[in-house]
Amino acid sequence: MQMDESEKSKRINAYLENAKQNGLPKDAYLQIIHSCNAKCVMCTIWKKPLVGNYKTLIAIIDSLKNLNFEWITLWGGEPLLHPNIVNLMKYVKDVGLQLQVITNGAYLKKYAPDIALYVDNLVVSLDSGIASIHNSVRGIDIFDDAVNGIKEIQKISSSTPIEIDCTVLNENSTTLKSIILLSKELNSLFVDFDPAQIVGVGNNSSYILVVSEKEIDDMMLLAKQQGVMITSEEKILLIKKYIKKEPIIMPCYSYCKDLLISPNGNVFTCWTISDIIGNILDTNFSSKWFAALKKNKEVLLGNKKNCFNCGFSHSRMPDDKYARVVINANKLRYEQL
Image 1 (cartoon, rainbow, N blue to C red):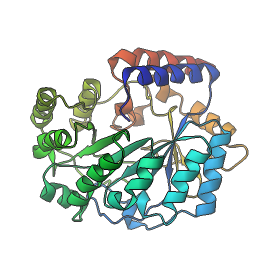
Image 2: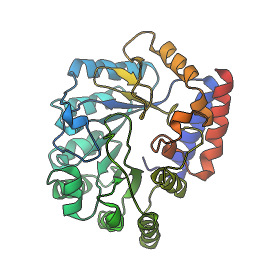
Image 3: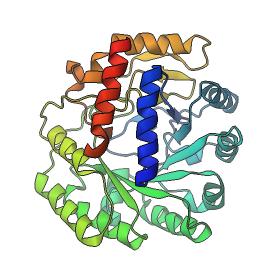
Image 4: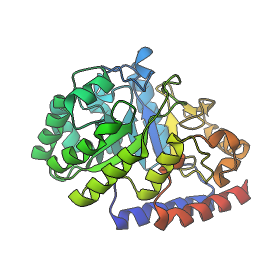
């Protein structure tokens, strides 16, 4: 999520304070559905259709509120396919939590009024500014729906934060600059770049990523020229290391910031390790999470070897201005385990 400097300072300092208390993460990524209208080349979630039970999802939201979480992200699959999506969005806000939604954009126009009313940050997956390339990646004719949906929301509410999430792939690497131009057309939306993940929850383990650094550098240059805000330079460097299969040895910011929750409440160890910690609905979940953290505490210092090739959690590290806060916070937490 793109934030101004004051909000970024607030959240990064909250991360440090949470480390002092050795508390649970504050952000939850709640997967409410596996089913999806798209068939993306880098994803396998859509191959196992599942719609989360509404009552179970409500109970999960209640549990997160009781555990003092602050943000909930609804994702899938395609979350806007859930038959109770509006009620879920409303409930998150009713209990006093901040709401982010990640979507492929196909149903944005349909739900534009609800999104403008309830969503605190909207993330739309767009992998190219060229319709044919994006549609090829997504396996469905979806580009126009996503772009027109964004424009519809902007008509209803100019204050709804919207960002573009672009997955760097073989299929779109030569068209990364087109995403910058598309952002400019859409009132200079923030663009977050992530490389295609080869392992982890819902990712295509058979995908082989081969991307030229030059295409990334050209995109960054154009972004500066056009005044479009993108992923921090530090994250871009991590993406390049990941693409070149160089070891990424640094503290993980995501491990103690995000909680990844399946539709039935099971909590994954992290985005790239599919081991189940426990269920968020268990009364003793907190103790299970701390036991898992203690077991994986080397992640905090960047010393866990099976994390060296992870391009996701590590690339969620804040920019250089705040990196030292995270490093100090992780050391502090490590010493308490």
